[in-house]
Image (tube, rainbow, N blue to C red; front, side, top):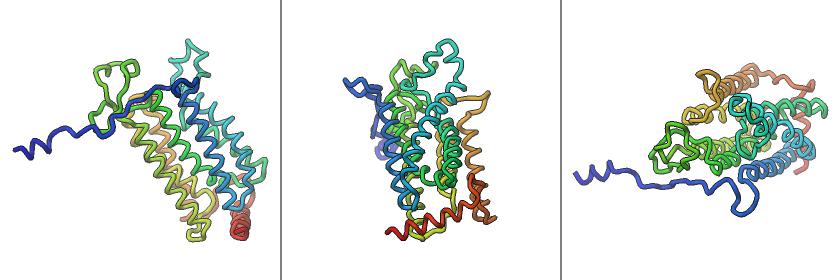
Length: 298
């Protein structure tokens, strides 16, 4: 009986997470903004390195990063505000206060893709070449940025008593849940998942540049689209603050669309043996030249 009593006892608190607050101690700097800025800086350095390994001018990545930031952050905020308009209609000044949280990664991706398409056309480079170089940095940035939700005590899941539960202050708890102290740390789930996707993309990238895999242009971005969307669909089902369109969780709908588009793209590339539509006439030829230049440079 003692054995069964011990077995059924509550698990010890392995990691009861609790945010120290949105500010970096005495400094007038918010963790949310600091993490986003850090993710952008690390992403630019990483994508520049990957570009060099693929024989692409790394200066293009530096130029592209400005386009992406200018397009992605406002798009992410506007996407969020559009689905939470009731909370901003009577306080329009709050729309600009992104340091309070409230940006949507799907909006950032859409804005960034639009900017990258224009940039690729103007610079006569394959859009999918750029997308492949940015994808690992994007998912790494998402893994870093999710910790901003931790410091803001937001984007958490349903109540839980798991050993890795997250403490949410009373004033941050949703209406009807004030009696609960601990919730699923969905920010942590997504951060860990995104790190796993990052590792997968980096393994595929280096196997590609080493000639162990014949990766067609767009493959890395499509794999990113599928794997990130799979994790986001699951994690979104745990969250309590999802952006909604009627009874539908928007992030889950977009995730299903991303999975479908990613799988269709891979079938197009490898089953039908065709190139993805691009802004230049012969992107695979361009990629072949870049690959030769990369291997020749040592």
